[in-house]
Image 1 (cartoon, rainbow, N blue to C red):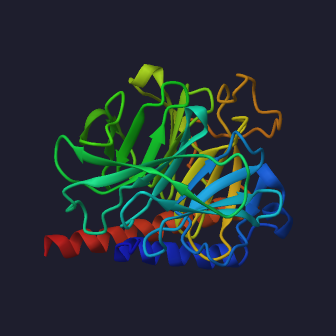
Image 2: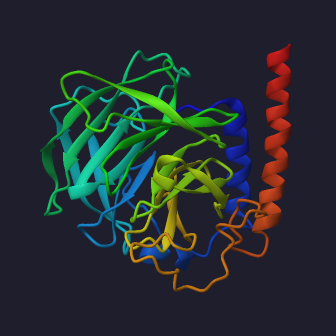
Length: 334
């Protein structure tokens, strides 16, 4: 997706910092759920990420707009694509921004982006069964028409509750958006109205449920928030340890819930793993890493301290972000 000038400028600065003294160690990007690099040259705008429960160590992803009806299964141990799915039974995708896996190994895809800031009269959600065998193949999907009760909007976060199967969307607004709830059962023949049920204090680019459905992770370009799901009445728990990335677009819990995986757009993009907040794992146990992560710390800075200079880099990017956003606001007022 084409981004506003401010986002592109800050993303460029972040990329420069990461490419120099703040670069991640090469070994970090090739160790499965400890992080990996997407090697497939066809994947240049990875916009969504979802951990397979049926195929351990596999993550599903997709490109942003202008790619086609394709999903990619990536082996986190090698970073290589082990299957590409071609979706049939749907129209031509417009702006695919998110992917989630619900009950019964059903893959849900959110064609919910809007480059023009909320002008589509409706958007689409697709559902398909996750293949039992990972090979290149064609899979028939079900297409759902989605509208919002309070008018069109841009969104990049689609999530499906792992217990109930209910579908949710979080809209993308600079000053914070809302969690939208879909009908209990989506209709493939009619229009599905999504209604706002809770405020989300973030410019959200993706979101994900923990495997047990008790927690919600929402990420933006430069930070993230952990929420207790609380039956849909979400309660803010703390800030997430979101790493500096070129253009942070995706988030997923690992299949066992001990890690939160953060992805970014770009060729040979990295997926970075951070410890999940306590209680997010499918077994309800604490992450075994014992790394002292500040993932759920209410006073954290929202960035990952992977290297000695990353926190300094985070402050530099945050300062640049404030300056550029300031110029943009000034330009708006003028």
